[in-house]
Image 1 (cartoon, rainbow, N blue to C red):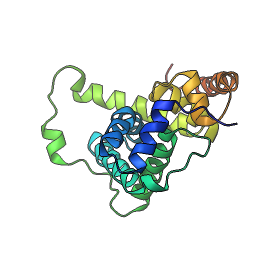
Image 2 (image 1 turned 135 degrees about the vertical axis):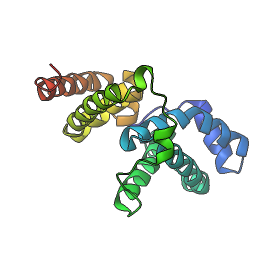
Image 3 (image 1 turned 120 degrees about the vertical axis):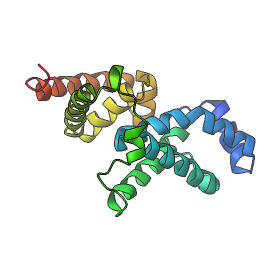
Image 4 (image 1 turned 45 degrees about the vertical axis):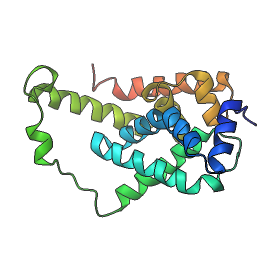
Length: 187
């Protein structure tokens, strides 16, 4: 299935490939939220997500000349770079289950940042994320794109290379699987 790439994105990519930093900046503005949300979902840390998002766009800038249209949107290419960076991060020895003391000290102790609330929210979020990770890869990608990234059915279909009807069915099956997996945990 060949995707229809919006003309403005195609022109921006062609300009960026020929060295236009303004065009690359416009592409950055258009896709930075998508890439950041994708990475944040995977790593769970704002600081690390910001670092990996920056690295994603730095690599994209270095490799923009090698980009070719392969039936996917430019955003899918960026998410692929981000996915590889996240994988590399977790494989490297730099990944530790540590919380810098600066992050602990900077958290106000009122409202939603009350430690008890934070623990409960963390447990719920962890369980939901584990349930999402237990879905098959297509269902997982559909849930991430639709609900974490907030993409429409059409946008999700475009990125996944499927028709909107197939995405609806995939989303329905994924939500039913999540409901079964979380039935006892979140009741």
